[in-house]
Image (cartoon, rainbow, N blue to C red):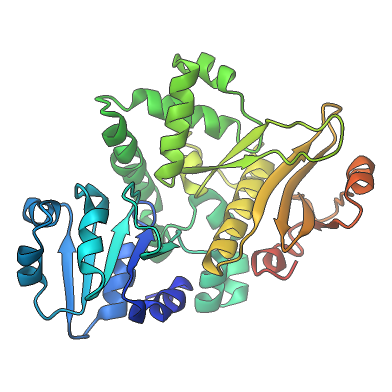
Length: 366
């Protein structure tokens, strides 16, 4: 098994007698991680929220019945916990006596003050570099930009297209369809294809509405559901003091590069791709997001643009400081922070990320 950075942080919370919620999309390795953590250990009860009996037991909030099921187990692991009605209320009854793991993709139940939350992503560059060696992972750059970093892709690269096709057709829309009680996935797929074609660009709800035939409110709702299902994530525009800054813009990126390529059925080598700059940007920002999340770094992520078309690809705000990054596929291209931004935010630290230093950026050294 490739070690996950998150494991250490989770292990530290095992003795707190709180609910540990492990969020993550389909096929990112949540169940594998927990089974690896508790392999051979006594006192662990694994349950699956997909099973009707388990849902029944945890939905009725009968403390006596719950106690008899849990018995002497000191740790309860519930896979697919979000499928159990009122699971948060039920866990309030039992978390004082044992540690409880919930492996979920979304959870509406309130557990304020009674839980620790963690987010598991597909493999990160850092995890793969530590396991396979930095040079090997540097050499795998094109594979990651095209096929992504889902565990199944990394561990079984010979079946990468088959896995991605199955992921997109069978799992990717599953949560959205369940949340919205939809019978057909064609509109969701149309929306995702439109996003894949606009990768790295600002998106307009009105334009997406026109492209998909969905009304604007429905587009916005589906985007929210796709983000909650860990398929996409949004980057808002940064705006504070510059007069003509774009204040309500948004960019949307995919959690994993393999998904947009699969949606568009495009797996050509990068040298033949007109969108390699967009794939590069999606990969770097999604990987940086993993790094921040894995290490518990509290940072806000933005892009910046003005009405006069001055722009910065990515801005990170952490510890009261601003960091501005430009992403260039060509190692020979350099970018500078626009003068209007430097004047408004003079303490900003800027860097251009290219094929020469991208590993330093993804390892948190830039």
